[in-house]
Every structure is written in C-alpha cells, then in structure tokens.
Image (tube, rainbow, N blue to C red; front, top):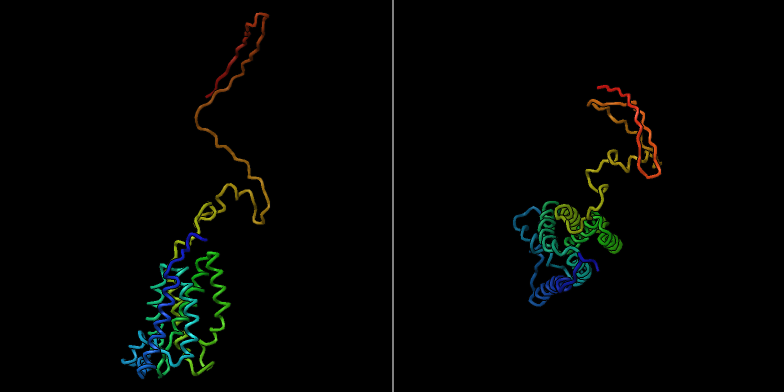
Length: 261
C-alpha cells in the first residue's frame, strides 16, 4: 500500500458517526413531534442564519435522509483515508461556506439536508485529485466522477424545483475553492533530475544542445580557444639521438634557437 495512505479507525468511524447522528436527529423529530425544518436556511433573513449550521442535519423525510446517507458514508470515508490532514477542515468550512452562499443566493424557502455537504465532498475530491497530479488521487477523482457525475445536473435551476439547486451549486463552488486553499505537499513529486526543476533552461544544458528543435542529433560547433595575452616562445632546434651497445645514450644537439616575446 502507498506510504501516504494509512488506514485508521477514523476512516470507518467518522462517516459512521456522522451518518448515525443524522439518523438520531431524524428519530428525535419523529419521536417527539418536532419540526426542525424551521431551523433550516431561510435566505437573506437574520433568523435564517442559524440554518448555516443546522441545515445539514435536518431532513424532510426518511427517503431524503436515506438518499444522503449512502453518498456520505462513501465520500467521508474516502476523504478521511486520502486526505486525512485536510478532512475536518473540509467538512467544517464546507458546511459553513456552502451554507452561507446558499443563504445569499437561495430562494425564499427553507433549505435543509446534507446534500450541500455531499457536493462539497464530490467537488473537493475530484478537483484536488487533478491538481495534485498524483496517480492514485487522479484515479480517485475519476471514480468519484463516474459514481456521482450525474449530480452535476442538479446544480441548475428548473431541473427539479423540489430540491435546493442553490445548495448544490453552493457546495460545488465551495469544494472547488477549498481544493485550491488546502495544499497537499506530501503528494508533490520529488525532483530527481535537473530537467524537472522549474528554472531548467534547455538551451543552456550541454546534453540538450545536442538536439535540434525536431529532436535530431546534431554536433556542437567547434570550441574556439581565445588567444592568450601572455608571452610565448618558439624554437627551431634539431634534436637527434644515437645509442651504443652498452645501452648508454649519446645526444648530438645542434642548437639554433630564436625567441619571440
């Protein structure tokens, strides 16, 4: 398994706790006859601001709750496993900012449900995987878009007037922004070669100079040595050698030298 990804109890515990808490809230509502809908987001009203915090935990009926529970279990587990360092920030700020944006752009009605958070998670996991360029996270992004890509239609108005498309759109935008804000340096590719460095200039590299723009091998132009400014000397001496049988050497030297400076 990749050294970056470590399984822990929170990978299972976090999504289970979150979803069970949603079911507990719904049980309280049914068991004691509460109407928590009025605690949802009511756009552009002071009382509706409470819904920014409370709305993800409120659902209209059991079908609404069930449809949100399955994606939350899968997406929260993926978030905690692949982005453990960022998971709580994404969940917390995802709820806060997607709710605030819904409060700003939403229709004058109560907006409830955890679908806004689901869109935050889908958006964050998809875009973050692409931005990291890490092959396992890119595979996760593609898996998420295959499973939940159809949700994209529900960020547009008039597709289904019974749902909060504003909350979906707010979640999508929030997740995209958070994928920019929270960095993942642990997944950054280690630089091993000079050509991988951002300041690498191919024209100055000795190896790359051996190739033209079409990739053909070319010879480098001859290096012209600069003339030295120091004085130099030449000689026209003739030097000859003769050897005797005793392996001793006799040198006959005829010296006629000229010097220039």
